[in-house]
Length: 371
Image 1: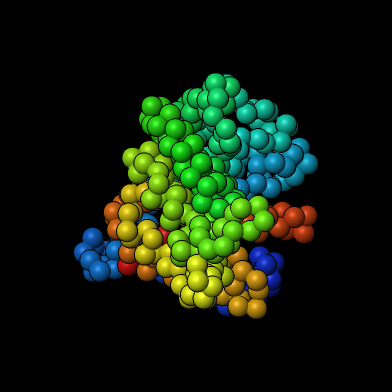
Image 2: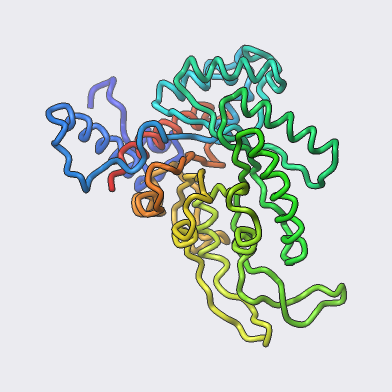
């Protein structure tokens, strides 16, 4: 090994990857390079069955993944800091879509406070400069409907339109309740807001965590507060989908958390008190009505049955979730927008460049997917 050579295992350690994850990441990058070289010779080099799973224009990232870079002070760090520099880096990597997780950055970053209408125009200019499109935002959805909250929602839709978004949403479930009455109220509220978003030319979406695919308490004996204690076997988000207008209310499936639900929420107590096994099928839910899922969170995980959630988050393409099959089989080809996300990407003071490096690895692996 020459003095300038990089020891692969040392690099893996520095990125926070185990040996298998590192090999998967580098294999994905090698596959992408091989496809590029093969394609340079002739357009017919790759067979039709080996098509690109995620087209270049659909490769996205939610900015929560690189929140450490957006929020750090550019005056004290040599790494990309603030929206402008992060957009430049994501554009260089190859991303074409971003999903916001709010509009806050470090006060010393170019543009300063961009969490306002003027700031939205500045953010749009930076997006355009780097060939990026904004697809949505994890913002705040009103919990009650009145003149004040509707005006606030309209203002959020105005910002979304300035940024060129097609969707507006939230990172939270419609309600954290287990009870049908609360989900019915949430469905009514979301129908109102979905119609409001549509009047602005936007699709309103909610984002799931695993608990939203647990079973609704909608039957059986009542508890001391008069609430049902057992289930008919309907999952919370299944009820929400069935009781909202498909023309106005949409979902962003977090594929990682949906697989956690498959691991965790496998049985319910029926009205007669018997335990009923029911294993969740994330892909099946999407296939039933693919247009309801314009956005995905493409978050990968290593299978870890020893952990409470059954998975550990890792860079996209280095885990055990079968994204090639999932993204190739959803239906409505070319419609969905997968956003790479990794909650654990920031490396802190020990590895401040980690989240953007994971973004690069994840982009390469997403680009290398073939179906």
